[in-house]
Length: 181
Image 1 (cartoon, rainbow, N blue to C red):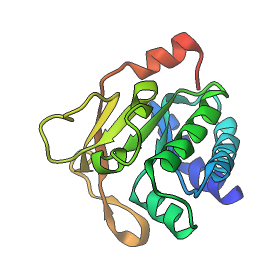
Image 2 (cartoon, one colour):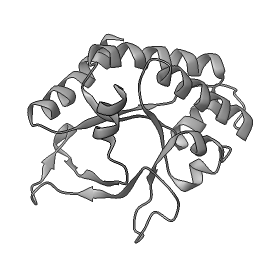
Image 3 (cartoon, rainbow, N blue to C red):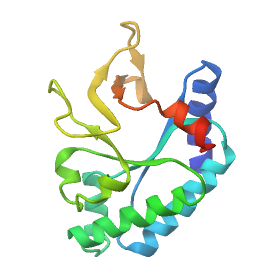
């Protein structure tokens, strides 16, 4: 809704103004396939406002909060339902011309059928190791990065860090070549 548009607007416009190449991610909060489709439609509404701005994938953020929400709403947290919800979301976004991926850590990824990362790139969150340990399109290797050693002040004056990632694919070239995002 309007709140999502406002929350997305400042970082997207600021990153673009600074010349950064950006992607996006969407936290899945759903208990079933219909909820996943509703999530996708809400995400597409935001994406359409910034069409042409994304040089990196639009990632479905699938983590423990997603699973807790599903359980709280009475949804099945079995592999079949979780995978169906993720596929539904990813297919809906992809069908609108966006390059999609799934963002997860290894334990949350294990809750899905492995075949999901055979179709979609994985953006793996795995900190404190020397390599991702599995095939992925991007690897988030740290959550405590700093920008030029500067304290990045976040909400309520708390110190925030930036995530540090390595892309193993040239996503900006893919987006341009295939006219995606």
